[in-house]
Length: 189
Image 1 (cartoon, rainbow, N blue to C red):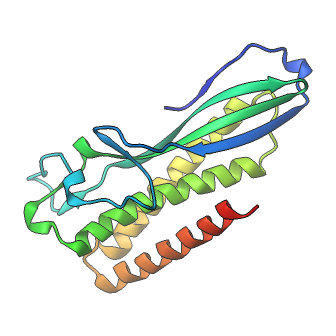
Image 2 (cartoon, helix red, strand yellow; image 1 turned 135 degrees about the vertical axis):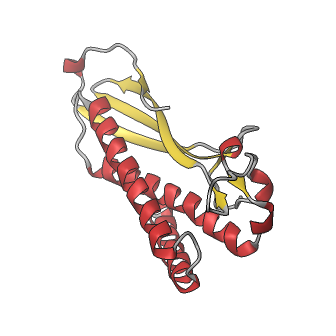
Protein backbone atom coordinates (compact mmCIF):
# COMPACT_ATOMS: atom_id res chain seq x y z
CA UNK A 1 0.00 0.00 0.00
CA UNK A 2 2.95 2.34 -0.37
CA UNK A 3 4.30 4.04 -3.43
CA UNK A 4 3.45 6.18 -6.39
CA UNK A 5 1.94 5.75 -9.80
CA UNK A 6 4.50 7.59 -11.90
CA UNK A 7 3.84 9.81 -14.88
CA UNK A 8 6.83 10.13 -17.14
CA UNK A 9 8.23 13.67 -17.26
CA UNK A 10 11.76 14.92 -17.65
CA UNK A 11 13.05 15.58 -14.15
CA UNK A 12 15.21 18.47 -15.32
CA UNK A 13 12.03 20.43 -16.15
CA UNK A 14 10.84 20.27 -12.54
CA UNK A 15 12.04 22.93 -10.13
CA UNK A 16 9.42 22.70 -7.38
CA UNK A 17 7.85 19.82 -5.48
CA UNK A 18 4.62 20.31 -3.53
CA UNK A 19 2.68 17.90 -1.36
CA UNK A 20 -1.08 17.50 -1.09
CA UNK A 21 -2.67 15.07 1.38
CA UNK A 22 -5.98 13.36 1.88
CA UNK A 23 -7.10 10.71 4.34
CA UNK A 24 -8.89 7.67 3.01
CA UNK A 25 -12.48 7.50 4.16
CA UNK A 26 -15.23 4.96 3.75
CA UNK A 27 -14.92 1.44 5.05
CA UNK A 28 -14.52 -1.88 3.30
CA UNK A 29 -16.25 -5.07 4.41
CA UNK A 30 -13.14 -6.24 6.27
CA UNK A 31 -11.39 -2.92 6.98
CA UNK A 32 -12.23 0.27 8.84
CA UNK A 33 -10.45 3.48 7.93
CA UNK A 34 -9.86 5.87 10.80
CA UNK A 35 -12.54 8.44 11.54
CA UNK A 36 -12.93 10.42 14.74
CA UNK A 37 -16.68 10.04 14.18
CA UNK A 38 -16.56 6.25 14.00
CA UNK A 39 -15.08 4.65 17.12
CA UNK A 40 -14.50 0.91 17.33
CA UNK A 41 -17.26 -1.39 18.57
CA UNK A 42 -16.82 -4.97 19.70
CA UNK A 43 -18.59 -6.33 16.60
CA UNK A 44 -15.63 -4.99 14.56
CA UNK A 45 -13.43 -7.69 16.13
CA UNK A 46 -14.11 -10.63 13.81
CA UNK A 47 -11.20 -13.04 14.37
CA UNK A 48 -11.46 -16.03 16.67
CA UNK A 49 -9.89 -15.25 20.06
CA UNK A 50 -6.43 -16.67 20.56
CA UNK A 51 -6.85 -19.37 23.16
CA UNK A 52 -3.11 -19.43 23.82
CA UNK A 53 -2.93 -15.67 24.44
CA UNK A 54 -2.91 -14.16 27.89
CA UNK A 55 -4.45 -10.99 26.43
CA UNK A 56 -8.16 -10.30 26.39
CA UNK A 57 -8.24 -8.63 22.95
CA UNK A 58 -6.08 -7.51 20.05
CA UNK A 59 -6.69 -4.68 17.59
CA UNK A 60 -4.84 -5.07 14.28
CA UNK A 61 -4.12 -1.51 13.14
CA UNK A 62 -1.66 -0.01 10.71
CA UNK A 63 -1.18 2.64 8.08
CA UNK A 64 0.02 3.01 4.56
CA UNK A 65 -0.14 5.44 1.69
CA UNK A 66 -0.68 5.60 -2.01
CA UNK A 67 0.32 8.42 -4.24
CA UNK A 68 0.27 9.97 -7.63
CA UNK A 69 2.03 12.89 -9.16
CA UNK A 70 0.80 15.59 -11.51
CA UNK A 71 2.96 18.04 -13.36
CA UNK A 72 2.20 21.66 -14.04
CA UNK A 73 4.96 23.50 -15.93
CA UNK A 74 7.95 23.46 -13.54
CA UNK A 75 6.09 22.03 -10.52
CA UNK A 76 5.42 18.46 -9.46
CA UNK A 77 2.40 18.14 -7.19
CA UNK A 78 2.64 14.95 -5.18
CA UNK A 79 -0.75 13.71 -3.96
CA UNK A 80 -0.46 11.40 -0.95
CA UNK A 81 -3.48 9.43 0.23
CA UNK A 82 -3.03 8.25 3.82
CA UNK A 83 -4.77 5.07 4.92
CA UNK A 84 -5.08 4.44 8.66
CA UNK A 85 -6.77 1.09 9.03
CA UNK A 86 -8.19 -1.49 11.42
CA UNK A 87 -8.43 -5.01 9.97
CA UNK A 88 -11.52 -6.78 11.28
CA UNK A 89 -10.61 -10.41 10.45
CA UNK A 90 -7.28 -10.10 12.30
CA UNK A 91 -8.70 -8.35 15.40
CA UNK A 92 -10.20 -10.41 18.19
CA UNK A 93 -11.66 -10.32 21.70
CA UNK A 94 -12.62 -12.92 24.29
CA UNK A 95 -16.35 -12.75 25.02
CA UNK A 96 -15.71 -12.31 28.76
CA UNK A 97 -13.60 -9.20 28.04
CA UNK A 98 -16.13 -7.16 26.08
CA UNK A 99 -16.26 -4.21 28.47
CA UNK A 100 -16.31 -0.50 27.72
CA UNK A 101 -13.01 -0.15 29.57
CA UNK A 102 -11.31 -2.81 27.41
CA UNK A 103 -12.77 -1.33 24.22
CA UNK A 104 -11.33 2.07 25.15
CA UNK A 105 -7.91 0.46 25.52
CA UNK A 106 -8.18 -1.01 22.01
CA UNK A 107 -9.50 2.30 20.60
CA UNK A 108 -6.37 4.04 21.90
CA UNK A 109 -4.29 1.66 19.76
CA UNK A 110 -6.22 2.85 16.69
CA UNK A 111 -5.87 6.48 17.83
CA UNK A 112 -2.10 6.07 18.27
CA UNK A 113 -1.84 4.72 14.73
CA UNK A 114 -3.70 7.78 13.45
CA UNK A 115 -1.50 10.14 15.49
CA UNK A 116 1.67 8.63 14.06
CA UNK A 117 0.26 9.05 10.57
CA UNK A 118 -0.29 12.74 11.28
CA UNK A 119 3.30 13.02 12.52
CA UNK A 120 4.44 11.32 9.30
CA UNK A 121 2.50 13.89 7.30
CA UNK A 122 3.98 16.76 9.34
CA UNK A 123 7.53 15.46 8.83
CA UNK A 124 6.95 15.28 5.09
CA UNK A 125 5.67 18.84 5.04
CA UNK A 126 8.85 19.94 6.82
CA UNK A 127 11.11 18.01 4.42
CA UNK A 128 12.49 19.55 1.26
CA UNK A 129 11.66 17.24 -1.61
CA UNK A 130 13.58 16.81 -4.83
CA UNK A 131 13.60 14.42 -7.79
CA UNK A 132 14.17 11.56 -5.34
CA UNK A 133 10.88 12.34 -3.54
CA UNK A 134 9.69 8.72 -3.63
CA UNK A 135 12.73 7.49 -1.66
CA UNK A 136 12.42 10.39 0.78
CA UNK A 137 8.75 9.61 1.42
CA UNK A 138 9.45 5.88 1.78
CA UNK A 139 12.22 6.56 4.29
CA UNK A 140 9.94 8.81 6.37
CA UNK A 141 7.23 6.16 6.18
CA UNK A 142 9.56 3.47 7.54
CA UNK A 143 10.67 5.81 10.33
CA UNK A 144 7.04 6.57 11.21
CA UNK A 145 6.12 2.88 11.23
CA UNK A 146 8.97 2.18 13.63
CA UNK A 147 7.82 5.06 15.82
CA UNK A 148 4.28 3.67 15.81
CA UNK A 149 5.49 0.24 16.91
CA UNK A 150 7.58 1.76 19.72
CA UNK A 151 4.69 3.92 20.95
CA UNK A 152 2.21 1.02 20.82
CA UNK A 153 4.64 -1.10 22.83
CA UNK A 154 5.22 1.69 25.34
CA UNK A 155 1.46 2.12 25.74
CA UNK A 156 0.92 -1.58 26.43
CA UNK A 157 3.95 -1.84 28.71
CA UNK A 158 3.04 1.18 30.83
CA UNK A 159 -0.62 0.17 31.16
CA UNK A 160 0.20 -3.56 31.30
CA UNK A 161 -2.26 -3.98 28.44
CA UNK A 162 -4.85 -1.91 30.29
CA UNK A 163 -4.55 -3.68 33.64
CA UNK A 164 -3.09 -0.68 35.51
CA UNK A 165 -6.10 1.65 35.62
CA UNK A 166 -4.18 4.76 36.69
CA UNK A 167 -1.76 4.37 33.77
CA UNK A 168 -4.62 3.63 31.40
CA UNK A 169 -6.31 6.85 32.52
CA UNK A 170 -3.07 8.80 32.04
CA UNK A 171 -2.72 7.43 28.51
CA UNK A 172 -6.39 8.17 27.77
CA UNK A 173 -5.76 11.80 28.68
CA UNK A 174 -2.45 11.98 26.81
CA UNK A 175 -3.90 10.53 23.60
CA UNK A 176 -6.93 12.82 23.87
CA UNK A 177 -4.59 15.81 24.21
CA UNK A 178 -2.56 14.70 21.17
CA UNK A 179 -5.76 14.25 19.15
CA UNK A 180 -6.88 17.77 20.10
CA UNK A 181 -3.50 19.17 19.03
CA UNK A 182 -3.73 17.37 15.67
CA UNK A 183 -7.25 18.68 15.18
CA UNK A 184 -6.04 22.26 15.74
CA UNK A 185 -3.20 21.80 13.24
CA UNK A 186 -5.36 20.20 10.56
CA UNK A 187 -8.01 22.92 10.87
CA UNK A 188 -5.50 25.78 10.79
CA UNK A 189 -5.63 27.87 7.59
